[in-house]
Length: 308
Image (cartoon, rainbow, N blue to C red; front, top):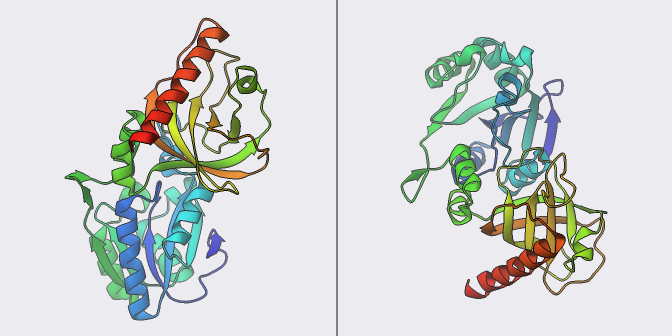
């Protein structure tokens, strides 16, 4: 997959293009991308995505911006897995936010990305003050020679699939609901790094995962599955949070205790799938109390996986 940063380098050929943040690459996104692939193949076009970094709400309302479901690397890997051949990552800044819809279409969609057809979601808006909509794109397509197709929302058990509904499910610890919306268990990827060995001192060695999320969409203690190990997936229990019972951390840390596992995996890049929430983070009065609770968490996670 070709990744372009900004618009200085044009697409190598005409594209079937979709536009959006694609945070989480959930079932709704994947349905749209499936349609994009089909249209691209039928017309001999390059299936392409225009996405933005940072999320627009992080520019306008940084304090209330939604938690990221996926880091940029994770999102790009998922888009590649859905058959996207080209991703243009546009820096979302004040200049891009102020770009009138007409100039956005002419300079970016037509000029830089050579759109032959646009496939968009039913809630897509663009341009300064979100003045651009489906009707504006259809009118511009008639002028510039591209088509526009709109996809309806996808429902999962009667619920509209969106990044927002996934965030709500994760924040509530409803991992099974989140998995239905995503079409897969929610996961966070990261590299195993050196820690302070607190888990080892407590009798439960952990792999400390360096994550890109400054504010993850979930926290607490979970039954998890780790992918990326040489001998295949492993079950375990994970804490994602700031460790209130030890030295409180400035940013969240993902600590994973893998069952019946002792290998040195420093430097490994793992994907941690969150299967079930066991409890919220707690502040324990003593390390002995913390150790006892971790032992209970391990047993609870083992029972969960045996019951699957």
